[in-house]
Image 1 (cartoon, rainbow over the protein chains, first blue to last red):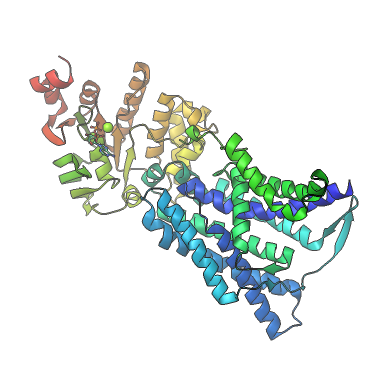
Image 2 (image 1 turned 90 degrees about the vertical axis):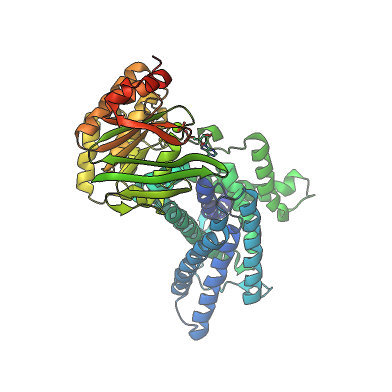
Length: 309
Length: 235
Ligand SMILES: Nc1ncnc2c1ncn2[C@@H]1O[C@H](COP(=O)(O)OP(=O)(O)O)[C@@H](O)[C@H]1O
Ligand SMILES: [Mg+2]
């Protein structure tokens, strides 16, 4: 029982990070039907930039309050990734707007290779560690342990997701985004500048990715130029699980994937009689991806493609 | 001084010439129709005006050139197209569809007043305001598309086959609305395959055949033209 609750909590934390990244995939797909494979790398750049700022601040004055230093890192990483997302769309995808769908997909993979290598040149091949400067309180719940950091990650994720839903459902920009997702042509007829809406979508998704990047590096205590690959692939799986193109789907898919992965890691040893260990936890994301693609390609909350008016 | 003046408009899709250099005009507050058989180039003409397809020629609207403007910028200058097939946002509510019709307008109080006016004009839409637009019937969707276009307060409304696929009673209702809108002083360019209906409603008309305008004049005169009668009115 203890291990179940503990893994559920761990899964929720991981899941909320996946959800933040999955939202970026799903928003872009919803509007452009493009899988932005570079999105995982934007997450990585967010983590790296934040860590660079944190390192610089601590180098200048090691006595600065830890929380303040991390907040400063986030406040630089978010706009940096927003600019990056804007530039990626403008330089790599916009010229291919009318090209066959394979072209932007290959370009996306190209962009992620470029970003990985740029990060490797700037920050090196090794792990960059996240200094232990955040509050490290622990709480007991139902026999499981929850840390301050875990609570902060889930709370901040929920806050950001609520903000995003309000933006999409309640604002003029959000309405333009939803209209553009249904028909670019008709949205233009309504006076919507579709290019601006597409840029805004990349910028918003990249801001979420930056936050997720800082969260994941704080959670595991490190960042790495290659970290965006696996995280991106898992978040993409989460988006597909929820129904790609669907915002609530990304949230549900992210949470669910985190929980499946954590429970799987907790029990995989028992299930396989000790043959496989918890280091196989990454397998679950891809198992889920394959199962969804085979049995329910539209995802849990996805509509049938015919419903896309 | 006409509101819309078109000179030598050409539209081509790759090698296919859909519109072969046509001239026409629409005056302030005028209701003009453009009729022709399927494939004559009517929709392409409207798309050309809105900058939705590659085109050449001179389009002047309210004294300014529209050539080379993006579609959204043309819409913001007061041209509203209700496209063939209506182009309703099916996964937005009726109210959201109307709201986005007023996307380019900033004066919220006036927009709100216009919204109420549209609900007055189309009580059916008022009843269904929080319903997803995709659940409406074809006729209701056509009403919504027209109301949505009117929310932009256009100076010229372009209607592409508003009667298409509708039951006779609904067609009557839609054409009553077209007349109502025209009586408010909004200029309308009405594209129809149903020549009888279009000539009956409009003041002036143009007849289009394989990408060219072959005939024009007062609608009454066109309706009495032997050629038009034979080709389009089935008489
Ligand atoms: N997107 C397109 N690509 C290629 N040809 C097109 C396209 N749209 C229309 N056409 C062609 O252009 C001609 C005029 O079409 P259209 O303007 O839709 O006529 P109408 O509205 O009068 O029925 C037709 O021959 C049609 O096949
Ligand atoms: Mg047509």
